[in-house]
Image (cartoon, rainbow, N blue to C red; front, top):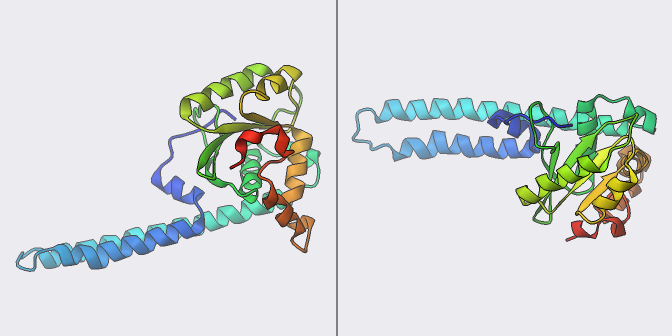
Length: 237
């Protein structure tokens, strides 16, 4: 959506999987409460004070990380709920731009990608979601345009962002459609265009409620893309 702010450490942990925060909390707690106090020379008269200060900060920082982990879990819960609540292209188009980004990020996460970051305010260079898979990085640009088609200029500019950032490729996801020129350019630019119908299909395939037996999840993990493999061979490992 053309929005990105410089992420703080807290915001990064909120966007990472919840278990990352718990691991970080355990590491910080051990370093500050056990390792750091042991490093202070016992002959130093300030060693007890420094040790207690380290333990205090260890407990504080670990507590903050645990809270961020809980926040990450809550965010993930609502992201899953948002995706599973979609039933038609109209429901997708009724989302706010922020909800649209969350929906797209969750759909790619269920496709087997690791979502590094998504959403926010400020200039983002045309990148709304950053993905990792198979040791490679992919950019996603979200365009919740309902009334008009996305033209070749948008795709061409996105190609420049990908080229200068060293990403392997990218996706432009829209609840609307793309012009023929945009599709022609993307086909030779390591960019996959996902329009409204394709996005709805992608969401339906990864919705947990779509198949109680888990068949939809199995089908989603077989292919990392929302469309056919032939449409974007550059993304495969």
